[in-house]
Image 1 (spheres, rainbow, N blue to C red):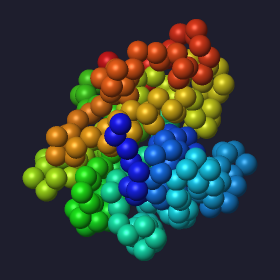
Image 2 (cartoon, rainbow, N blue to C red):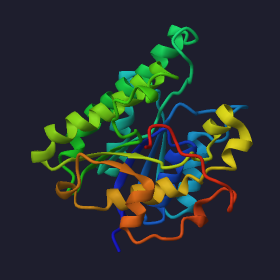
Image 3 (spheres, rainbow, N blue to C red):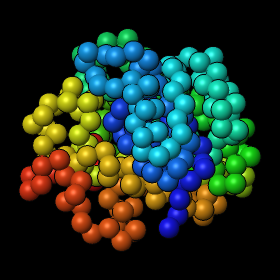
Image 4 (cartoon, helix red, strand yellow):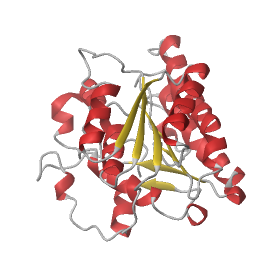
Length: 273
């Protein structure tokens, strides 16, 4: 079975949610996980810090490095990458998971929120990839994975929250361009997006427990990410994966284990046809 044993993963926004779940799945293989996130101290509204995440990863069988990092700040990103390399000797995988969300229409979107989403989602993804790339180019099977949606120019995905869609699609545009740019250099660049809503702390802030009941746990995305990141990089790039499709391709037929509340009708995520 393919494994991430001994690989070093640099995961942004890994203090909780999907980022942490991907780190924990890699840790079960014995991977090294760099937890790069802003959450250096506890937040009363959101569970987990980089330190609690690192402790969970080590309990799961991995080695962890907690690095406080605001991906809007270039100096912090480059320092985090340097710390990762000094600790683990290189970087094999970058997971661009950190994201900001604000689901409002044009009149209701403060420019402060617009700027935050574009700085974190589009610019942060570009910056982290640029900073990790010199080390990825030295890795034997390098992967970059964006937690971003398939690109679709249907107006219905833009109209309700054009600022968020533009920022989130910025991550996907990085996949479109970088995968082709780096194809001949052997670095895989792919996107992964959930078929259904995922029960995370961020979702609870947006829709509460009632929405979460109709979703899946972050483990479904983590298992799909693991399947992608263990594939040969040269044969797996430029894809806009959906978690369920990836796992079906791996032979998974029982998705009930991922349900927050088995038997509930599942809500589809944004951007999924």
